[in-house]
Image 1 (cartoon, rainbow, N blue to C red):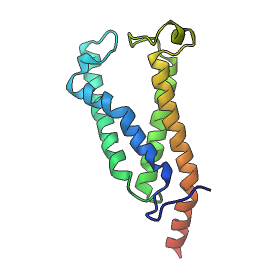
Image 2 (image 1 turned 90 degrees about the horizontal axis):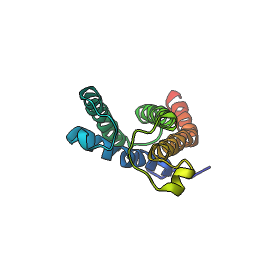
Image 3 (image 1 turned 30 degrees about the vertical axis):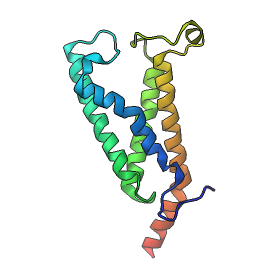
Image 4 (image 1 turned 45 degrees about the horizontal axis):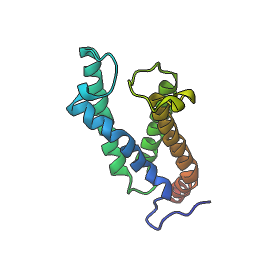
Length: 152
């Protein structure tokens, strides 16, 4: 089993910061300048949805930053961890199955291996979702021990 720091924080808590690193660029650009996002066929409706999504993502980033230093056994941190896990694996699935909507390419070789911006972005989301699930499993015993101690 991996070591827990004396402050009650597991080393895999860094996944909350990885969530921020992946999402902040889209959140900031989506709030400040959604037209500059490299997406195809932006309409007024999609711009409103991008701004609303960006506000939601900015709020999740703020929440992730606030829970990062907290001990792993706190229910709020665990609830946010599961919510982010669901969010990232869902985004990953959506991006893997999406038609091309980012008009950029990593080159012919990358395209031949299906390494499109959408798939790479989906892979990053999937990696963070998997890491959050691993974090949950590695810290569930700590949460159970604290709950058991509190009940005595």
